[in-house]
Length: 231
Image (cartoon, rainbow, N blue to C red; front, side, top):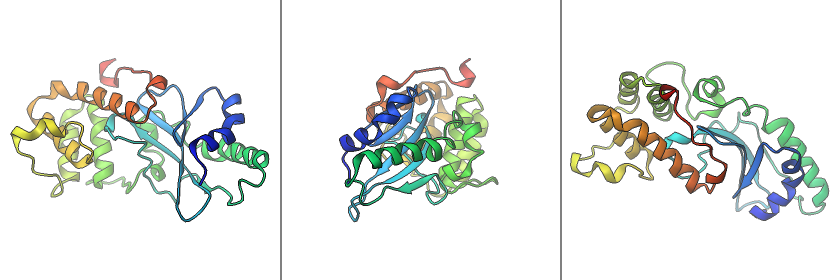
């Protein structure tokens, strides 16, 4: 499988001509990053020498520790690099850059926020247009309701979407789940704030954004900005 350095070398012509793109780790993404991370990730497999190139969009404010490229990958703009990519690096670079620019980037470039994101169901895992929403989509819907200041709706959707699967966290142990690796624990913490102290929700989501870009080593490309209800 290609290393991060090898991938960056292959992508250099695209990075040179597209100043709105950057590459970190194994991820090519649009800059500056505000509330949404949009790009393509090179997914490594041990069974092949090539990577799968998957386009994605995800909110920063979900507090995930990595790129979080989940979705319906068979419907996202994804493809496999050719197994003989090392045989002719110049040819591979040209083909890879052209395909990413013409095929992978156009579907995700407009996905700058949740209202745009939800119009493209392929980029949500288990998307449904009807309530009760599946757990993952219900979480993202609730988070968006929070940044719009619709806290009653956020609580309602979070409860109905995750009914029966949210962990029962004792009140005295809540704080340790604020940045938990398990998104269900973070959802339980969010629900705790929705019920106990809504004034702490927006600071929490800004904190989750900062945590995510730092974990992904993308802080230098992040442009912190207010949420819709703070404008």
